[in-house]
Length: 177
Image (cartoon, rainbow, N blue to C red; front, side, top):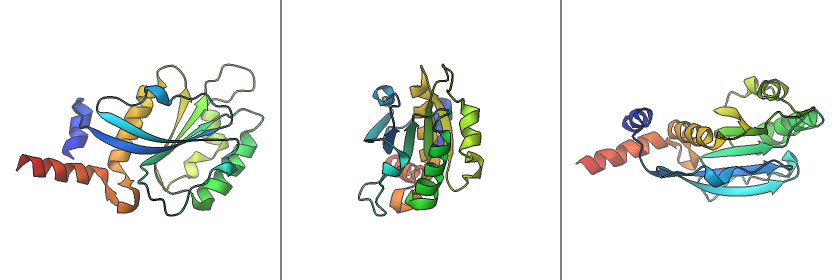
């Protein structure tokens, strides 16, 4: 709890997150500027053409804190993405870790907005994990870093089934004694 309070006060601890990053289609990459002094992100970057090309082994040797789906989504492929998202990922074997969906900025005819994506993907039904949708625009890196840090600190981490926050609290207690 101490680390969460520090986070809200702007006093952060140094730790790293392991994030599975899937770039689906021709989505614009963003990961270059997300890490900061207090948040080091280890990226497992995979570029795929469709959501059904994503393969996540049931027993992964690495500890993953969360996943990012960077989607190239528009009015033409939103139905296909909805089917693949639910059939392949959610009802398939996608682990219930924090999930961030990144969509392109709505700037041309045929683009979809954040609200359209929330509705089209029926994300309100996704209750077994924290999730958020961000628009891939200028300055999104800081918002993503803050969401990842806060969410992964408070969500169960990997196969350990222990919240990262408790681990940090234990380290702080050990250091103070």
